[in-house]
Length: 581
Ligand code: ARG
Image (cartoon, rainbow, N blue to C red; front, side, top):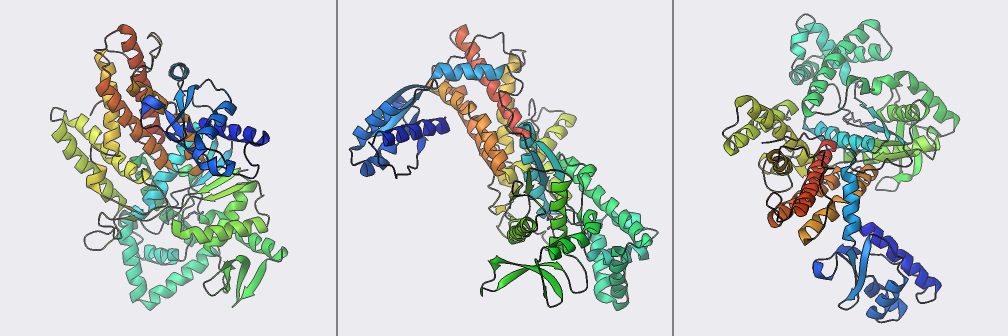
């Protein structure tokens, strides 16, 4: 609605410009707000006040001219002037109600498919396989998966790419250690964290071992059969750990989505050749680099993108260049999104620039680094266990479920044990995911069990509970919220009804925004606001005890659309809803 009103105002401005009422050179920034006092309108704009000076007119006079020049639209029933020159808009409630009635007949809730539909590669999760997944990998996995779901829902073709770090020098150490353990290794590897620590200890203590580890890296990269077999075994186990976490989190990644750094191994030499042929490579201290004018250090000296080390080894950037080429040539991506720590921002700016210069990707292919901040402990300090170790994801999820179990059993002591378990799992996992999703991804955030598990505020339990409230209305009537066609039409009479309806009508544009910006917190915020408006509506407008049957039908329709929108929204965030809790 705000967008629509802005567009109408923009067109009024340009027609006043062509009439010579407003100067041609102004670039108005049009603000449309939801009106606080609904008696004077649903939306308001201060445009006339901001333009009055440039127009050399009184704000109220300009407001009048703007209103006269405003194109008609069926969504708006009335426009008026208030106070010093505000333009107020009344929403056409019949039009709104008719639109929502139409959404109710559609399983997609009238969410149109995107135009054009794109092929979108989403690079997310992408842990380094040397260690077990820890909390640092949580954000990429959860945020990336929510955006993937929204993109797919809008009809885009998504290719998930789990660009795991499976090819670094640390593998020499792990292989050397795995050889020593050969017989019991399978059991040892069950605890990857421990395995890594022990290997590292051996590496630091024994020069003989560390020599062997370095030798293994060279052999591995040269394609030695025995080394490769061991490396594959290690990766299989390590990826199995990751998959278990994805399954538990309800993340849609599968083993088929894994395409790690090693997959590009045999393409790296040709990347170097191509850069060489384009004249982009410079030798610096034996390493081969690309220098780009736009990247300089604090002293103003150019920063290199290192492509190949003096010893011949390749780098993280090299495999990213090869991956971009693959995503263009083989996957035919229109758009590639990278959900990776904000601290890698410079890396991505550099490799994107190099890839474009080298012609590995065409200008038309969008490359976007969707960076995110650090996840800290509740105290705002880096997330660590009490003894200073890294927190394992599995332990964190166990604790979330345990705490949810306690909360739910207190709230609802009559539940049987099996149902309680199921609810605790959904609430615990949902809370962890939602806490992450609901913050702007680019800011750091503090992981706090108490806040995320609260039944009040912008949390998963609050929204899941809001959904069960709607569900219980329909349970009482013994009917489903998905078939309400037999009920009379929606009529928006009370302000609380109109406000809930106006918000319901914003769902499609919210999803479009999330797909464009890669920001699930906008959807979280939308759902939180929806639950709040439903709450006010529920308090002020009795549903089951409505005075007339027509009113009851209409309110049931509003409740049904609210419930279905909440469920659809939470599903797109990767959060399960429950019928009761
Ligand atoms: N494995 C990397 C890390 O944990 C993230 C990889 C992100 N994706 C990419 N194409 N570089 O830091």
